[in-house]
Length: 357
Image (cartoon, rainbow, N blue to C red):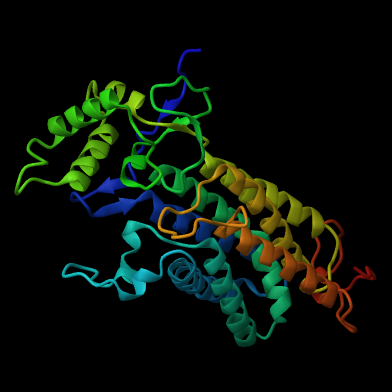
């Protein structure tokens, strides 16, 4: 079988001003997610599908932006890399927690931040907290989708190996040069190692000499040269990389279109406040557990798996349990009128519906 795997050559910078500074696709993905979420919530408000006014949507989005970034970053440090709390450098941004340009956002932490932001926004705007959580849940898959696409562009959160270096791989597999900088780098044969060293000598002459760039910097230069499309380099590097599942794209599809369609199908009829949010927790958790089967655990973890499950799968299992408990509670609340729904021409935001769901 001929090798049909695709070599990842995408540049993480949409616009690069200096070697390390510029507009990254990762930041643009967050911007696109928030803008699409703002547009969707405003459209829902105009149609009176939710209790928020279009003006209140803007205030809620600002709180959600803060919740996502603080929750995502703190969550990543707590769940995956606690050393960030005590990492300080002599160059900007000086503190590891602020070095977002180097990656490190946890979706589970971001969701906790979103919940706290919804609690604050609901009290400020005078709408039921559970209702606001439902509304945000209906828009959140868009942001998750863009975030996973950004993970793919960055070549991070690598998937399981389909074929080892030098072995043929199917067309849907991807070879990520970024694996050279991770603990997921596969072992190379002596010949392959010699060819890799020759490439490093080409892009960073003297890297292994006193005062040289060093191995990490040389590997970074090699990856950047591939992203720039240096002639002849990609053909020489590809056989030295493993072919992997594009797990970022699997998760983008699951956490984006699939989750979005499921939640909007549930919300076709008016639902009691909290029902959609509870289903979000359960469906997202289930999809994440499944897609994690093709994704490798973070290489920063001392114990990557517990009882065969990754950290992300355990957190997702907790989400499913929390969602099930929440659904049981909200469906048994007395006096909670169903709200929302897009399938009937009723005054949905006012709760004018006889649906008992």
